[in-house]
Image (cartoon, rainbow over the protein chains, first blue to last red):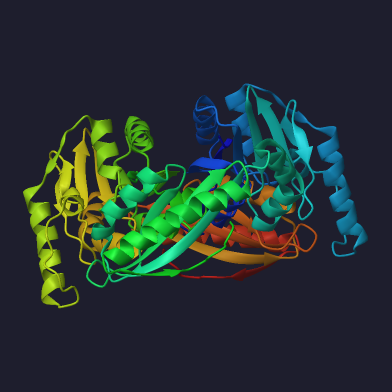
Length: 277
Length: 277
């Protein structure tokens, strides 16, 4: 039912574990809340052929959207547009609108008086406005490099910077409205309950039964204690045509599961009775 | 030079953004510090065919190691071993040693008096000891499900649970010694400096020059401020045959970059003069 999304995060700093991939979680949460489904998240290095490969692989799986983060800045290792252009076999060219956006940013920095020298459109700055042919630019409300949209057959590529406030700024301003439009009211709904006094291995058959009886609801157990001192979180989630149906489906599964667990001597407690992603 | 690793994280909770992928960062940091290189990190859902697909894809890229996290527990949605067995075309069978480990865990839980009923080896519990044929088991010092090692041509698959303390416990006890052995003293070294008073777009040419002159060192700029109020982190890293060479290479690149930045009016400050991952 829901539209599908692949997330691709580009950056050596993620592969050496220098930073946590908070961008992927933020995007996954937002996209899920908007009623779309994230099918895969991939992290690759700042390498043109790696970026080109993963773009080609993801396109073959024909998701509705591919959202990338990272590699749009002015330095030599910002290679995302080059890699994507290669994968799509499209030339890169200076995009007049993008270049104007960038020029304006630097003009503002001069006017603010923070930077004293005259700012010229040097090669690294022009690079941020050199986009695959046919690109649509998304203004960057926070930083300099604009976001980019490209269409390839039935997949829309959304190319965002890696600096979190810039990525979030462009997403909320320009990408969220597009995803909202295509998801047509489809809603994700989730809730969790905390369970004590029963082991995860004893709950397996209960989840099996509840999921058979509630096929629209996904139930997943997350052990927080250990099997010896059992403390579990059971997470219920669904995606439905609207929020009423979603809530009704989750509530029914929750009620049934609660009864089955209590019958086995477990104790249940609602964690987030009404949370939405 | 360094051995290559792919990380595969399995779990719907990562794709809906319910949790941050701290496992991937922890592993990436550990693996990098041990002198190996993480080439790709992929997150897929708790779905047998997804797990089988990504395993097959990763094997085709012939990394030295594939390390997976998640999906080893007792519930129905723990499908990692099934997916990997499918990809490798190997049958699943009860592994006597693994089953004994699991039985012992439950016996201990009973002896500790925390759980009062007699613990039987129910189907969900036997499931944790049902492994692809030819598997080597890695004891789980924290939880119940053991880790698994499988060899396929020149790739070693290391299959770890998703619960962080269990994953870390098995890694440090059983996986680290193997990686240390194969990396034969190869060392990763990194250091960072903080730069103010110069824009990222103005530093691009300096990084270009320093990387041309120091081909073993990777230099990456991370903008922390904005282009208007520039505040950058420059991260220097290298992997070398031993730590002396690694430090020497990074120091030389650091010195040259510092001089070039100061000549352009930028201010530099060492952030972590001697940090190791």
